[in-house]
Length: 95
Ligand SMILES: [Zn+2]
Image 1 (cartoon, rainbow, N blue to C red):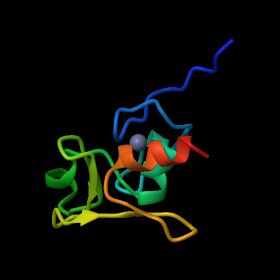
Image 2 (cartoon, rainbow, N blue to C red; image 1 turned 45 degrees about the horizontal axis):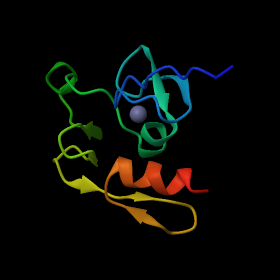
Image 3 (cartoon, rainbow, N blue to C red; image 1 turned 120 degrees about the vertical axis):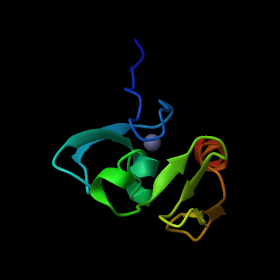
Image 4 (spheres, rainbow, N blue to C red; image 1 turned 90 degrees about the vertical axis):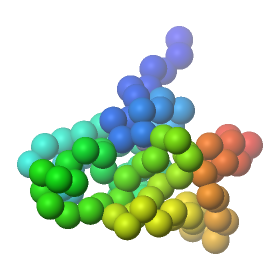
């Protein structure tokens, strides 16, 4: 029996465990993977509605970007840095 992981509503991937949390940009909850949650990323498309920019996941580049579209590195507790989400997942999978 394999454990089915619900896709993250921020990056759309289902390769990491997810958890439902309150959004930081509105009065609703989303399903976040551990990476999106750690990066503080929120679903795109609300910028105009709430009038502020926030961290999001960019599907085209597989990178997290801040409100000014600057790329953010994924930095682990041990200080390892990853440019893309996929890079982090691959390295994490190796253990
Ligand atoms: Zn995610």
